Image (cartoon, rainbow, N blue to C red; front, side, top):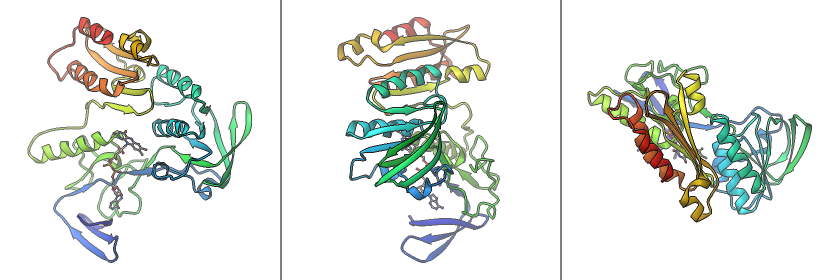
Length: 342
Ligand SMILES: Cc1cc2nc3c(=O)[nH]c(=O)nc-3n(C[C@H](O)[C@H](O)[C@H](O)COP(=O)(O)OP(=O)(O)OC[C@H]3O[C@@H](n4cnc5c(N)ncnc54)[C@H](O)[C@@H]3O)c2cc1C
């Protein structure tokens, strides 16, 4: 284990600037790039100079921001916004899109938004950040353009949660013959091989879905292929959770993806309020939604907003594994109904 920052000098040859001083050159038969991403800072006048928090600093704060302004209404932004609201901060979310969690189905965004608003979180949608003044951690003023006109927001701290940028710039990938796509991610095939022989890319820098378990699964695919198997990232099922309260869990197709892929589906949807367990524990917010094939009873996707959703998705994932064509058995409709009820 060598602690330092690596940069290619030639194909499969890296120079490492060591953390405790000095440099070291390493050459290898095989190279695995696993450099991850970092928080994107939007190009807005005054924003960078305001020294906004990213998730890194927000997870280490030793004070409570009186008024935290969160830039971005995606998964990281919402988790942090709710956590800080519950610690006692006033929280404002600024989201340029017309709804929160733009990658989710509309009903998911519509369910989550009032839950957050009821906790006292202010949500500004279709809000374009124009300018920032001041220093995060002291006092900040933000100018935002919304449908209702320009607004000034005064806050104490800014948290940026506006997407990720791959850590692929300035590390000599051109010298190594490793090509990038138009967004700066390493270009890979389904076996995670790059354009350079014997160089692979793993995890977020390879454009894989941005989850720890997917980065680990990328590793497994490469390991298995090196051992003579033939595995690919294509068509793998990606299960994930957003750790708000209630939780959001998803696996398989969403309605939007089914539409984009021209797959006709039936939708079985059940409000959590109808689930006896949710009634008994008074955790009634949210819903469960299963996407079922048009002509068979295969479960193609599952989404849940609700307490314990994180515990449900391994079960959903199992159901979806059974649904996809590579698997033998299909899921009978009666079992889905029983499972939704239970
Ligand atoms: C706030 C937040 C919450 C998240 N929550 C979840 C969650 O609940 N569940 C989940 O599954 N995922 C979550 N994720 C995503 C998850 O953290 C990432 O998908 C995962 O860490 C990506 O793994 P990786 O191996 O691609 O890269 P990383 O874990 O980012 O590792 C990359 C490493 O490479 C190092 N590096 C970069 N450049 C160089 C270089 N030139 N030389 C040497 N080293 C270098 C970096 O310092 C870093 O240590 C979250 C992410 C964020 C930001």
